Length: 445
Image (cartoon, rainbow, N blue to C red):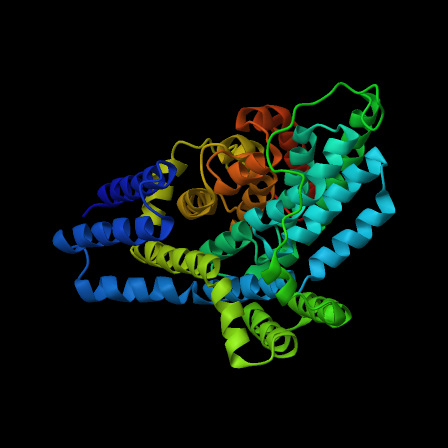
């Protein structure tokens, strides 16, 4: 098969995968493995490669992502345990006591709670932690729920850059490096993003205050979403370990510090953290098994997606299809603009986020863009960083991200109102983060 035909087959493969993902025809894992298998069968049928060679490509692809899959499983389990023991609840309650009815303070606290809640990298869990806790306060002070959503997604976009966050892990998978190694390069931009998120909360808190929130003069807002009444959860009380709060905080801090400093695989750190947390908080095999099973669903879903994406990447990369695709696309990129590819990618990431989900964005687009960048001598990591940081800002305003609908549903906000209120602000935030990365030398041309 000629290089042009291989490139055409590659484009068809990626388009089909993206179409399956966007139309919700199947789950990502099945889309990756099924389409890759068909592509592999075509390559074998045309005599381009043998079945044995295709098997080796698949093995190489999966071997390149198994560490990332393990990281996701044990990071989800670790932070799930910390949620079960009530560590996050206690921190949130302590913070709220200091805020009271201060509108700006409530906005700032929303940002801080969302950041803490998003330590596990899960959008759904963060919305479930933040919105039920804060919406009653917003109702009492007559603050708009669209502001609550904007502050939440600003904070979550920044925290989603952590090495166990989905986009960072996906980008690292494509680059073939440890998520921790990619995150260390992103840290300066993440620090800037944290200040921007806090600034967003401060500015929008003042906007709410100026329109009369917190006073009787504010225009009455109609709320939907969750009810005010607290729901008693006997099982949650059974799992809580308030007497071990200090211990659990120390364990969490030790895990995070070791992720930065320790020269061991990230997934091993979480394995040890899970073992310690389970042994101390939940003695006995029966209870430990119950805790692990309760978090098995989301952990295995994402791990299976990553492993099946490894099959996809093995077929696409080991056969050099990606290289041929990049060569075709590189011909349409002006030579004078090629070296600015990270800047171009960063500027258009937010609009693209509304059309492409996380899997198709990173597993579908990033390898092709890296191939194009190679034609112009662009560091692949710089393209990945621009995509990860700028795309993350808009993750939870995207209608193709399921967690977005959970958040808007909990807050009683229409998806169109959420996008209308947040889109341009978030796009501006992403551009500021991109510029900061260029100034700080994280992204170079």
